[in-house]
Length: 236
Ligand code: 6PG
Image (tube, rainbow, N blue to C red; front, side, top):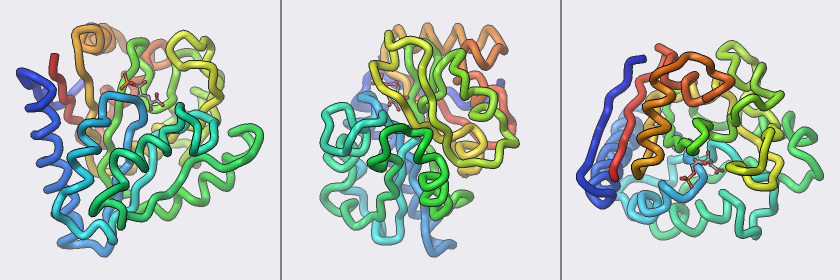
């Protein structure tokens, strides 16, 4: 596993560093390309980062933003990653960014795979940065351990941007069907920033480093690949 480990004395320092590295990364992309992409993690860890990044000085009108995954709930639902991102990132200057939603009002995520994939094809993939989170069970995005969809969702050669996922247990995932970006999609970005905070996530990460079974801990699929540079950001 080759990745950059970036450790900070506290979360404030980590978020400040990430605002700088992601803001600079997007500005660098926009110097040479018409559009830049940001693939943003759901969950709670990145929220302070998004609140700070929303004010970054860059041409947000040329940035396209999507999510690494979504709980299959409407955008007004408290559990919605889209709702969180619109509150925390897509406000202030970043409101000018074009958001590409994962969720659409079909009964199941399975029924939306084709249309969601079509929407995601509008992301400037090789000119995109990815912010990824990890759960205490070693999932990332909505790539949950032992889920039936992992055969395709973890296949680096899979020809699809997204996949519906039914987590095996609700213990970490909550009671939601999910739509996730596939590993193949995540590996189409230019750089992956994996955000971890707290001792439990550090212990989970160390457990992930000690094995190779990707179905057991899907974050291993990101750590074991050699296509895209991975920087792991951690603070207590
Ligand atoms: C989600 C996320 C998920 C998240 C991890 C960590 O929909 O929950 O996309 O993959 O990144 O579960 O979540 P926390 O940051 O809340 O611990």
